[in-house]
Image (cartoon, rainbow, N blue to C red; front, side, top):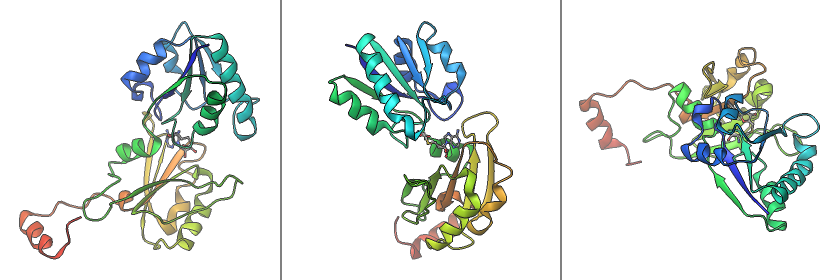
Length: 249
Ligand code: SAH
C-alpha cells in the first residue's frame, strides 16, 4: 500500500506552488488533479500518470464519492499518489471527505499547504488583509451554502468570499442585509496569481458593476477593512497626534 500526498498547487501560475510541493510532486507515480491547476505543473512530474478528476464524470459535489474511491484505489496499487488541489487543500477543497476515505482504509497521508486565492488576491490588489488599527480579523467564507443558495455574513473586519463570482448583484444585496454599510469597500480579483489577473474596486452597493469585467473567471470578493485602497501615509506629526487618541490595536 502507498501513501497519498495532498499538495496545494496555489491559485494560478505553476511558480506559486511551494518548494516542498515541487519536491513531493517529483516523487509521484499518479497525480489526481482538478481543472483549475496550471498545466505547466505537469513538467514537475513528467513520469507520473496524470488523471483529471475535475472533468465531467468525476468532479464536483455529486461525484466526490467517485474521487474518494479513486484515491483509495490508486493508493492501493502505487507507492506515491499525489492529490493536487488548487490554492490550499484545506480551504474549500473537500479535503475532509478525502481524508476520511483514506483513514477508513488505514492509508497514510501528508498535506502540503498552498497559497489560497484570498492571499493571492491581496497580493495582486496590493490590499493587505489585515490593517493596523482597523482590520484585526479575516474570515474566509464561501458565498454558496451546501444547498447552493447564496449567503453573506459580517463576521470579521475583512471578509473574503469564495465562489461568489457569478452572483455579484445578489451578493451585494445579501451583504447589505448582513449589516455591511452601502459604502463599505469591496474588491474583486479574478484569476488571482495568474499573469492576466484582474482587480477592480467597488463599494458594497455597487458590487454588481464588476460582473461583466470578471465574467467566466474564478474570482474572490474581499469586503471591509482589507478591501480599502491604501490611505496616504500619515506624517510623523499626524501619527503622534493620532496615537494619543487611538487605543493600541
Ligand atoms: N482551495 C482553493 C479554493 C477552491 S474553491 C483555494 O484555496 O484557493 C473555488 C473558488 O476559489 C472559486 O469559486 C473562486 O472563488 C476561488 N478561486 C480559485 N482560484 C482562484 C483565482 N486564481 N483567483 C480568484 N479566485 C479563485
